[in-house]
Length: 385
Image (tube, rainbow, N blue to C red; front, side):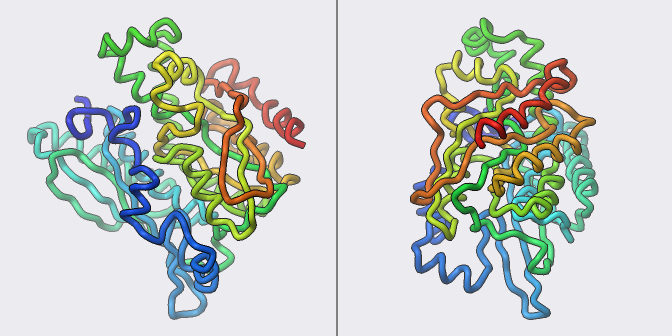
């Protein structure tokens, strides 16, 4: 069966239900988050309790902090087990974006659709729960509880919590001019998921069939699914090794949206300039053929469980990428590696993509191109030096 979001639609449609609220809408609903005045930024650093992706709560005991996050969304892939893994990876990424590699506890949030019959419910829900738990175990943690409700639509997500020493997390506010921007997963998951659904929708498939084959769409969908299910835990650990200054995970606001959010939190007057866009193979062509509805090349296409956008010292960026590739050598393809995508310069706490960014077609898992791609990091490093 196909798991669907509201009104029978995908959780990821161009500008649709898979996207987060618009930035203006978000500010109205959550005043004080996303955009701070100078006074509020200073106050927050005196009490280091507000993080971009997770809340950081100083505890009364021994200089420890509770770091906690929650997230949930509608299903976007057909495999309930993989959907559970993706949901768990997405929740944990908020911790990983702060350089935290250990999670003490997870809760699972699950909404069971009242439209499902008992047979489907008994088949789908245990698989989703198992996928969530398996991903949690891969991340070195466990699911100890949660909440299940009946709802018109399936919703899956969770809560992740950890008690940390100050040296175990990296506040996302230390970028300085001269830093390099690195992305640890390619873009294009929204395009891949939608293109896969369009295989059964002739009026939409006809718009893209001249630029991609049905087999390529199926392969890209599998690649996107495995990428979304991949934990960002390795990148979180390497953030400490290579002295990362700030990071965030790329999800519903797209690359540019999250880059802007991160830039606004910096202590220094900086701007992020993005030169390169690593994108799952064929997704650029599909996006253009479909009339740029996803705004993929503008950095506004929603991602789910995307990579970390990390600000690194220039001399450390290529080493970070090389080590990411070494850790991912057994899973070459879209979910393996990292890419230098831009620079940090002096500016007014904003982000932009240059007019004609370089598109890096990230080859699919197991393809010949995937084995040849290891030289890309060194080349990009040279271009930006």
